[in-house]
Length: 308
Image (tube, rainbow, N blue to C red):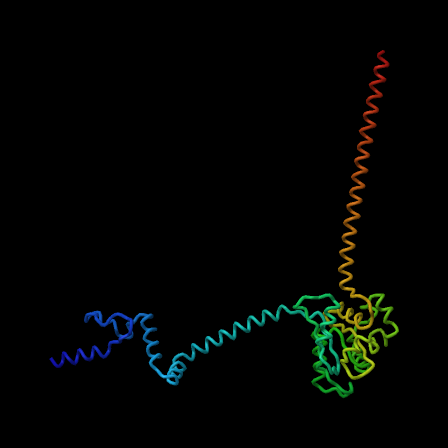
């Protein structure tokens, strides 16, 4: 009898009671299912939640950290990965339509970039005007290694369309064949308008530009610009020079408008020519028909007279 009681106590001690889960009134054979290893996934979750709910705050935090830290780390890494991918996709949408390096810049370039983009008539939110003001040097002959390497990287990677600086700085890079000839990239009207401000066929002075001076970008004067050969946006670089130095309208937008006008005019001319050709053909056909009828009537009349 005592053995049987001990056996019953042992069996009862290994059973797991879960609130809301039936099983307290099961018979002896079905009670064997109440071992924790035999629980269903749902019952195991309920048991785990019961354990956590019965703990205090600090004990609960320790328990979660000890048993679920890998799960937590996995969730955090997953979220970070998703954010990274989304940001990468978003950055891929942006495009630099002009990259300008300003040597020894002292003021913010945000307004300058916004005004030039407005001049272009470009309202695409993903088009960027990029001004690099990180090149800070004294004498070009004393430029430190880091600045030299940065200039090399900017030029070599095509990340610079225009270089703005003093004459000595630009002359140094002109000797290294970094710039376009202005006669090759400027259109005839712009080249003629700026000819008096050219140091040579590579470097242009813009020190007297009221628009440029209004932004107070640099402390030195005079100021010079050049178009970089390796740049990816030479057309936009020319428009930047046009905007700074003249009152001429943007050639990029006017070319587009002119193209539409020319196309429309071409279509009109074609339509007129087609109409004229059609009318000429109709007249010719009418003339031929009239001539044929006249000839036929004349032959009939002649035949009638002969018979008579």
